[in-house]
Length: 227
Image 1 (cartoon, one colour):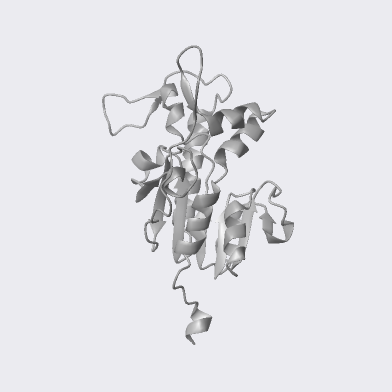
Image 2 (spheres, one colour):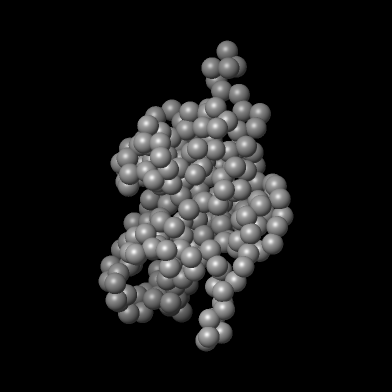
C-alpha cells in the first residue's frame, strides 16, 4: 500500500506503516525529526496529491482552525454572514485571512484524488465551516494515558476501534485553580519557541499511530495484487 502522511514531520505514523511493510512517506514543509529522511518528502503536500497514493492521513495545521481562537471573532445576528473580527489578534493580525486559507487547504486535502482519506484535527472550525467529523477519539482509548480530543474526517475508511482503554492522564493544578493535562504542560515547558511548542503539541500519540496503521490497512488488496 502506498501511504502519504501529510503535514507530518515526526514520522510517528509513517514509521508504523513502514513496520507493517507498506510504502509510506511523511510530507511536510519542515525537515523530518523522525530519523528517516529517506521516507520524507519535504515540500508542499498539495504537489504530491496526484502521485498514485492508496491512502492519505492528513494533519493540517490547526493554528488558525482551533476553536481556542474563537474569542477573536463573534457571530453576527445573521447566521448566514461570515464571522466578523472582534479585534486584531496581537500576534496574528491577519487571522481571518489565515483561517480562510487553512480551510481552503483542508478542502483541497479532502478532495484529493486518493481513494482513502483521513483528515485529523483537534476540535476546530472545520466542523462548522466544512462538515462535522465522522469520529472523535482520545489517546486513552489506545493505551496512552492522556486526554486530547482528536476529530477524524473519513473517506472510505472505517471508524477506529479502541485497542486499550486506560486512565485519562495525569493533571497539573496551578495555584489559581487552573488544571491542565501533564503532557500538555510538558510540551510547554520542554520547548523554547512557539514553533517547538506547536510541534510537540501536535505529535500523534504512539497507541493511536499504531491503531491507524493496523486498522486502516487490514484486509487491503492493491490493484496490482488483484491482477
